[in-house]
Length: 91
Image (tube, rainbow, N blue to C red):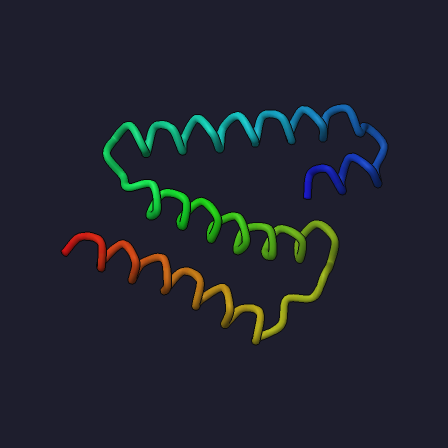
């Protein structure tokens, strides 16, 4: 998403900085979660699911892309699925 912003807008350099900072932050927080004892499958599931959901929401705001009720329901299913996996792993 930030790469798209960089390709379409003036001031692309600052968007590339956002991309690099975002990737660094994602890997740092993933590493901290794994070091804190979170299982790899759970951590990756949360990481991937939140990426999909947040990208869909941000593209609606930044690029005025559609976000239909069905898509919103899908985001809800993603959140529910990750929570169920976390609850299942706790047992």
